[in-house]
Amino acid sequence: MLYGLAALVAGGGFFALFPMATLGVVLVFVAWELGKNALDSESRGLAVAIGAVSLLSNVGVAFVLGTVGYWVLEGVHEGGEEGDGNRNGEGGADGFSRRATDRNS
Image (cartoon, rainbow, N blue to C red; front, side, top):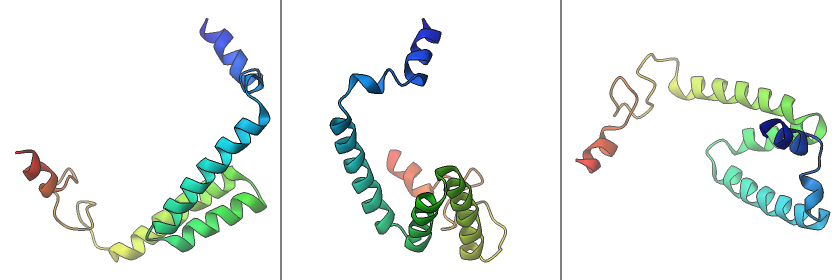
């Protein structure tokens, strides 16, 4: 049963169930929402660069370069200081914020 479902999805039969115009409209709405979130982020330049790389080459290459770029920017923002991984310095060794645990108490 599971192999049959995988074959249906992998073979493209699943997407053949929907009209191409419907899939295109869904794709436009998803791209619009992702674009709004990317422009609201702190690293707007990185988001634009990832989008440009994905258009010019490959989504996989853009993912890898975006991940590396994020790690580099996080290292720059932290200033190379060692800590518990929480930039605000409010969390414990597990990285959770104390404010979040205080609200639940």
